[in-house]
Amino acid sequence: MYRFLLSRQWVILTLIALVLVPTMIELGFWQFHRHERRVAQNALIADNLGAKPLPVEELTSPGHTVPRADYWRPVTATGTFDTAHEVVVRRRTSSDDRVGVHVLTPLVLRDGRVVLVNRGWIPAAADQHSYPPVPPAPKGEVTVTGRLKADETTGASGIKDLKGLPDRQVMLISSRQQAELIGREVLGGYLEQTAPEAAGGTPEMIPEPDHDSIGAHMAYAVQWWLFAAGVPVGWVILVRREKHDREAGTASDVPGSPESDTAEAQATPSR
Image (cartoon, rainbow, N blue to C red; front, side, top):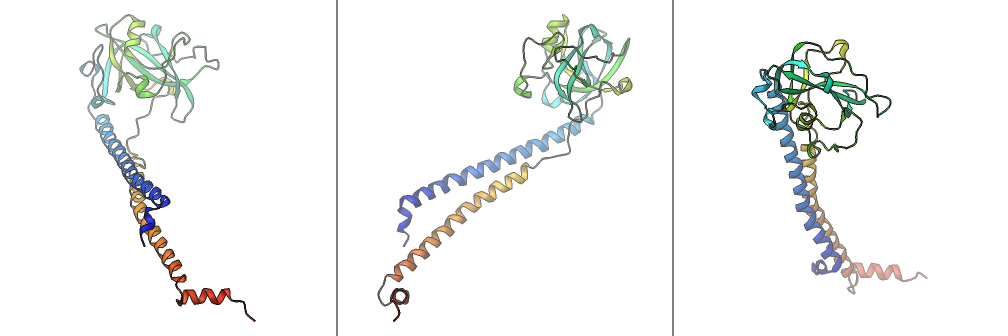
C-alpha cells in the first residue's frame, strides 16, 4: 500500500521535505549564533564601559586600527581644539531619530599629535550644501573624556563614502582622511565625547550603546527548529492519510464488502 510513494507527486513532496529539514536546522543555528554574538557583544560593552579611563595614547597611535576588544573603552585626552579643521559628519541621527550631523573636531595633544573628537549631534543646515551653525568648542587647554571607537568604513557601517561633498563635510569618520587634510599625525580611531558636557546641551552627546537587549534571535532559532521537526511529522501524517484513503477506496471495489454493498445500495434507484 506504500507504492504510491514512488509516484511523481510523492517523490517531489518527499524531496521538498528532505531539503526543508536541513535548511531550517541551519537557519536555526544561524539565529542561535547571532544570539551568542549579541550576548558576547553586550558583555564586552558592559565591561569596557565600566573600565577605568586611560590616556588615549596608551590605546592607540597614528595608523593604528582600534581592535574590537578596545571598542567603547573610556579614555582621556588633554589638548587644544583645532576648530579650523573641524568637519561635520552627514546623515547621523539623534537619540530621538532626528536626522542631522555629528561634529568632529580635532584635539591637538601636548606632543603635537591629534586625536579626533566626536563632540555630538546637531541639526543639519536647511540647505544640505551649507555648513551648519556649529556650537563653538571650548578654548584653551581642555581634558576630554570619551569612548574609544575605531575608524568607520563602508564595509562595517554600510555608509557610502560619497565624493564631491561640500567643504568641511564628510560621510565617514576616518583618521587617515583627516590626517591628510590636517597635515598632522592623527591617532587611529576617534573619541565619542562624554565629558565635559557641552554648554547648553549642544552638541547633543551620543548615548551609550545598548548593552541590555539581546533581541529575538534565540526565539527565532527555536522557531526554525520547531518548523524542522514539524516537517517529518507532517509528512508522516500525509502518508498515513493517503494510505487510509487508498485502503478505503480498494475495499469499496471488492464485491460483497460492506463498503461495496453500501455503494451499490446508494447507486440502486428506489421504486
